[in-house]
Figure 1 (cartoon, rainbow, N blue to C red):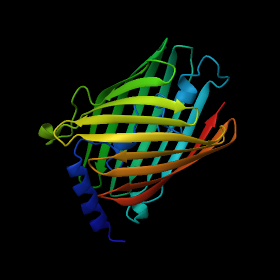
Figure 2: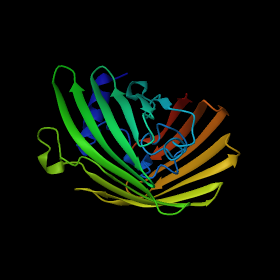
Figure 3: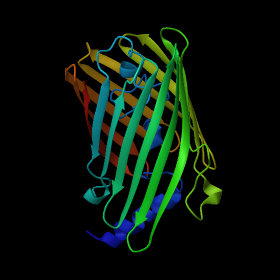
Figure 4: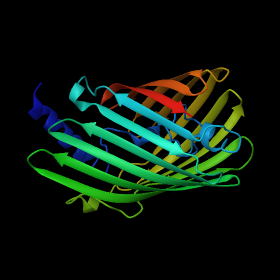
Length: 273
């Protein structure tokens, strides 16, 4: 494997996505309300099954680990994510996440701590992110930024949500003119117990904004779910399937496609107790 080629490739991608910690992850998979998510790590903050059912659920902990084995066929470009959430009380849930991407010559780490507050039908959250980008024998940079997120239950079936990233406009050196910020808004509606649609818009500072549509379908009771996601710019699509053989365990897999990176897969294991 030509390490210089991989390094050049990753630096190019990171430059194009200058303020995107965890460069090869797409924000496009994020759903502000969490209603179209089929796994914990897909949306660990407002996971409908975990958060909106706080009052009825016997589970106080939820955790997951995710692996993307390769990008463009390069095993070196794998990524790993893990997260854990604890229902401390009926109104407060902290969520801790860890993301790693890269290999020996180049890698990125993202660690985030979110505090989620449930107030009647309103969920509010603030997230603190620590990001480190490392290039061997060259440089290592660290930034800290804040995100705000919220989900509001309008009716039994209708939800609105937003996600504002990098509120303090933190950036790596030499990228002051390309500070990466998102304002993501979505409207989620449960058409039935088996179908949820969540259209939305992502406003991206200094880049093209985009529209997206996320769906979630229940195929068989609470055992089998599938969701589909589509972004307009850049073009991004994803299909995910989750299987819950036990109340405390879920397995999910995703097949993603982007214009820049082609196809990649992700595998997630989730636990509740």
